[in-house]
Image 1 (cartoon, rainbow over the protein chains, first blue to last red):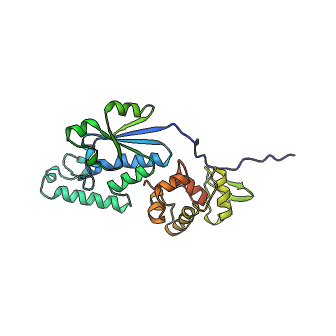
Image 2 (image 1 turned 90 degrees about the horizontal axis):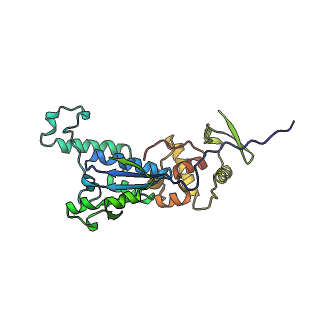
Length: 169
Length: 104
C-alpha cells in the first residue's frame, strides 16, 4: 500500500494582491460616532484591504487640528444612553458624558482619535477631506491633520472608490 | 484536534492551521512556519515574533498589532512591510499563538 503525503494544514492568508477596496464616509463629529469608522478602517487594513476614509461635514471635526483632540459626546437625543432626556441639557452633562466615554475607550487600550488616525495612515490607509465642507467652513489643508492626503471633490471621491465597498457613518 | 507536520515537526493545530500548543514551538519551527506562508525570516522579523511569544505568555492572549507596535517598539509601518497584508495574523501564525481577537 502506498501512503500519500498530505499537504500540511496551513492557514490561508489570501492572495498576495487582493483587489478588495473599502471606502468609509465619516460624516459625524461626536466622539461616539468617530470610532466606528476608525475601528473598521483599522480592521480592514489589518486584513490587507485598500481602505479610504472620506471626511465630510461634521466629520471634519475628526481631522481639523483645532478640534480633533477634543471631540465631545452628549446623551441628548440619544435614547440608547438609557438616561432621562431632561438631564442631557443640564450644565456639565456633556462634559461628564464625554469623560466617561473617553475613559471607557481608554480602558480597552483603544487610542484617541489623533493616534488612531496615525495608526491608520501608518497601516497604509488614505484620508481625504471633502471639498464642499472645506469651502463651507473656510478651511484649507493647513487647518487639517497632516495625514490627510488632499481636499477632494465628490467626483474625485467617486473615481477613487471605483469597485469599492462603501460605508456611510 | 488535528495535528499536522511541518518540516518534520508534528504540531497540534486548530482547523485553520494556527498552533494550539504553546510549548510545541521552537525558533526552528518558527522559520518553517514562516516559509509555509512565503516569508523568509530575517533579523528584522524576530523582535516582533519574540515579543508576541513573551506577551502571550504574560497576558494569556495574542497581542494585537497596536500592542506589538506600542509595547514592542516596532513601528506599524515596519510591521506591514515585514508581514504584508495581514500582519497580525501572519505574526501570530509564525509565533505559534492563536489568531488575535482584539479589535485595535
